[in-house]
Length: 82
Image (cartoon, rainbow, N blue to C red; front, side):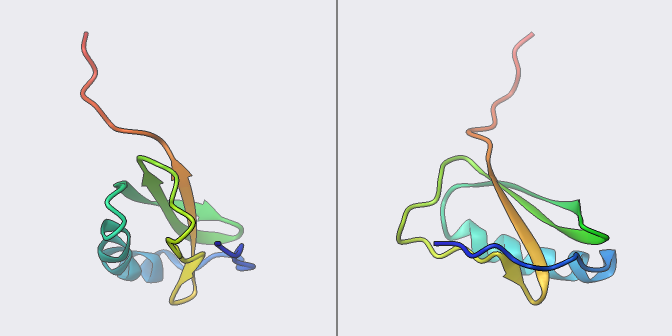
């Protein structure tokens, strides 16, 4: 189970530096559809979009190297038909 990070956010530079590490970590879940940078308190954090809810046995971090991580289940991303 994830614990909520009690962080006020990080600098944009620190978040950018951690983003590749987060991508490698969350790709292992097989549900990663995207990672972005979002406002978090007075600073920034990572927003991780997943296609499905993480399983109970998946221990996903609420922060990586002091950078807060917000997880959102957005479903499968598909090309929009016009």
